[in-house]
Image (tube, rainbow, N blue to C red; front, side, top):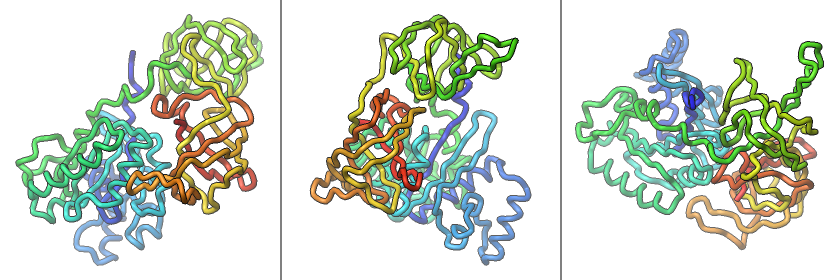
Length: 418
């Protein structure tokens, strides 16, 4: 199997306000030579105007003018860069509590979450919130960057104490892989280049970690799931009988000759051919986009799902979901919303709110269960038609939904199926 698609690593940054997330990313871009000359000149000029003695690398990622003026990150800023080993997409997410929803958006597809801790402050409430969200979103790898080591004289004891604090807390969470690195984003210690100031630290630099962390197996290669996005019927003389189903593989490995079932109809067939822009494939796996052709002429349309005969998703209309609420208008119990799940669209009603989660303590509040903006809670919904789903922890694509306000067409919540 050729995992060329694993060359793209998505990571998200999280941390409290002023922990140096934007500076860290700026430093990474700067030291890995991923900045254009004109960008560099622009931020040098901007730093001078602001009367700063050093070049402010945070200005590289804070794209919104109001972020640069206030020196904070408000929205998710996506940055793309690459090194000879890998391509990267960074979601720089805000640290403030009132932007929890932005963090969820940026982190939902990430392979790695970078959690920043200010070495002077140690593990704070926001650190815990972000670790909880990372574990809720099942981000496979967590890197804790203990930043501003230059301000505590690169003291090993301080680093070890923070590491121990975080490990104690993380033991309660569902986090599989945690890694700690002492850094100074401002001075560039252990970001791209090894620091001489931390001879006691023997682990990798942040860049080395990101280039080498094993992410190929973050996808689910066991359960075959292919949500159909579009039916391709060219209707030309050359492709007169061509009927292909286009979409993006959400799980499993699909091979020519595989016996498959189409949901919801339940009809079986065999994969005749797998096409891509580059040509035909013998097998395909997530996250590839392909066109699948079947041996039999079955009625298949957008929203259907092609799966293996002996490995099928759950099919149902009653779902338990952890929801993160995005909207100023709170979640309405008994309210009706549009729902999107893979390529399916339906409507649903909120049957019950089980509890609201206190993100700071993991406590389940069953008294005050109103779910307001940036809250996370557990709800039960009933959909107007059956969905083909897996638990989110088994498959992050077939296990997630979004809710839509039908009046305004806004996305009001994102959910993880339990």
